[in-house]
Image (cartoon, rainbow, N blue to C red; front, side, top):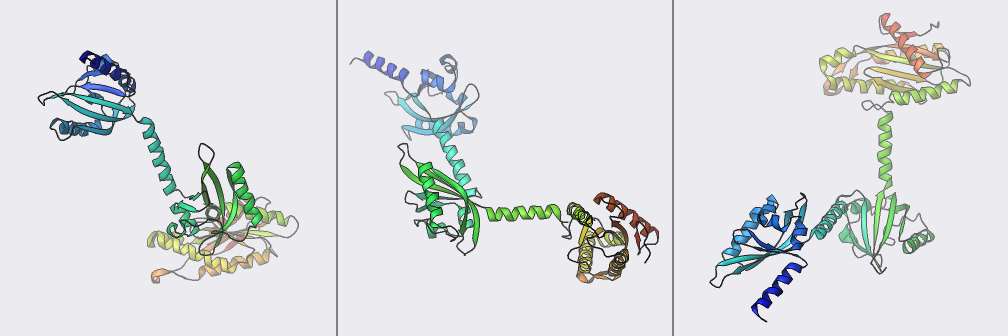
Length: 423
């Protein structure tokens, strides 16, 4: 074959190659490039012939490219392959696998570089997805276990170990069947579960399992069958969500929504609910009472000794008052130094007055706090009876507050009814 025939063959291969090709001068100028490379990075041939490939290289990788070119030029290597990023004409990042070969003249002087540029964007995207999946797998709060086709344990994440209390190195290779069995489900349950996985490819539902330490817990389990393109079973993936702990969190959130964070007493929201319930009960007969209690001297203690001491005092007040009440009564904290007592079944106005006196007496005794501190406060009480003074929770609290104002105006340390009842 003549030289010209070889030249024509090379030109044809160069132009129609399935990857980007370029001939680049030692100084970086593009001498010749094919259509595939132009399509890959969005420039026309004329545009690229006025640039060097360094001009379209991602800034973070230009120094690495220069090092590789230097090694080729000084003869340390005859070719190099690296993964790098070009910048598309539209601004997007283009991941490529670049193979560079240096062609030398007969005397050994560098003639030109041959650049072979392969688009690896799809594989890079897949690699990124796999990294994200691996990160999710390792950091997920959901326990994930991978089983082989015989349902033996291949791998499991940290959450699975935490939920089940089984270490992976102890259970790898073991059958999952029976490992977590709580004895709360019969064989029929498990036959149906695995039959659904075989026939439908997945199953999900609530299941009682047992931790390694023996505790039985409720979880939401999802099982998926993994098959190849021909439909052959490769593996099972099980995702475990510990519902029992989620329910504990939900219960704690509900508690925080209904109870005062400082004293642990019912807050305004729970108070209004219980008072409304008490009002409904007296519609069938009987009497109830709302006692609005405010501390006397609390502000001075809080200002002089500090808020931590004030908080400790409020906690002590709540505990002391609660001990004097019945289980059926409600003691709530509205905020600050204001407390509300709801009596669901008050015998007479006289009995309510006696309780108010007793609560005031309890408040009058000194409180021993931490670090040897001893403080003393007093209190005033306003009382509204129901249904006599109102049939609405908001109205009753407002009227008890009005009675409290009357008590404080009378000199503090006393109680007053919204409407006076003689003892």
